[in-house]
Image (cartoon, rainbow, N blue to C red; front, side, top):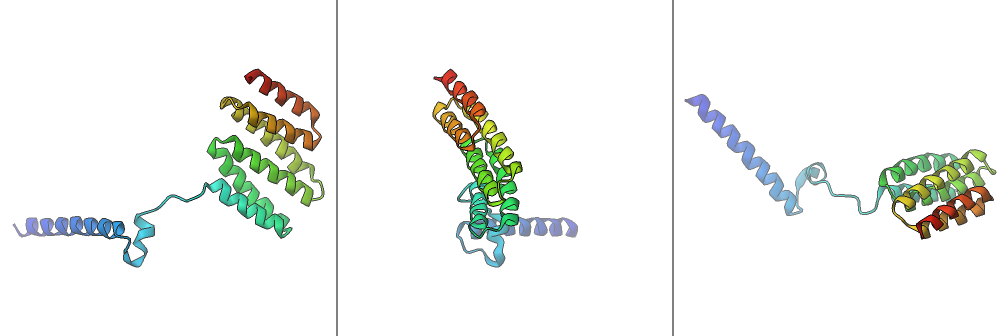
Length: 158
């Protein structure tokens, strides 16, 4: 009988503690940092935008090493979004990194690959305006062959 009462008491304390924690979390007055541990809030801006801001800061300081590191994280986050605009923004930063690095062909090639990836996503979204913007980006890179191919892709959607 005593064991059963202890079990009931412990179960009751667990329920009261859980309800209390949720009630405090809802009231925005949770002590000891439980609001971060229990009540996680979504980030106000997408992860890829946060990481691109870090790339821009590093580029502004001409910190190539930090820019490359932040760019890789931004690229990963952009791929996970399924958004062609996220990929386009990452490709633009790759071009800037290539310029800062003295015209590095690695990041220029990465930009071309990412632009093609973005064109594929824009095609899936049936967005010829985005695809034409990508064609213009290829023209700026001096890659007229890819620009021509991407424009044909936009024409097929129109």
